Image 1 (cartoon, rainbow, N blue to C red):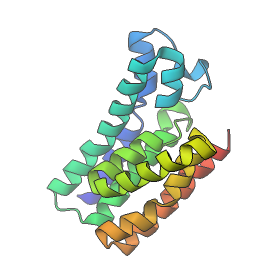
Image 2: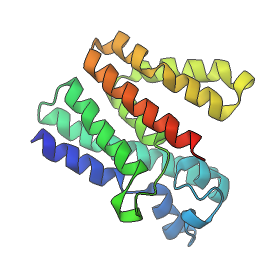
Image 3: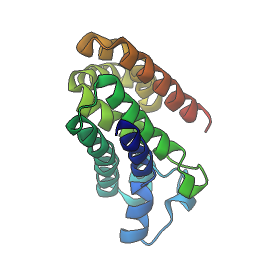
Length: 178
């Protein structure tokens, strides 16, 4: 059952909220606007703050739904982390868009909100402290580096922390490519 939910997670990840919002409300293709990245930040730059919030919420929800289903069917923390990874990878490398997707931050944070809200709080504090010094992107990436450690601290899941560390590296590499 968990394997099916992991597959469903990948499918949910392929729902690029920025692409849908751009097409439905603005009649524009986010892949051709701004940085051409189908993520919340580019949607905000191109379409405005309300689009940013809609995309952010949509990308968070598309991660939480498969996690909730996994929890309902008795998935443990490590299995839930694998479901989260499948959503984020689906968002970053969607088959339906020739493996060209977003950078994975919003679904990553959505999964963390579900699995360990305190980890998100630690990440947010680190980002807020480092933002004035490093700027938005660098402070965000720095705060991501703390996720496996704080996740382990709050959940005591060594394997979950390792899995999140691998996912965090994938997200950071995706950011460094552009």
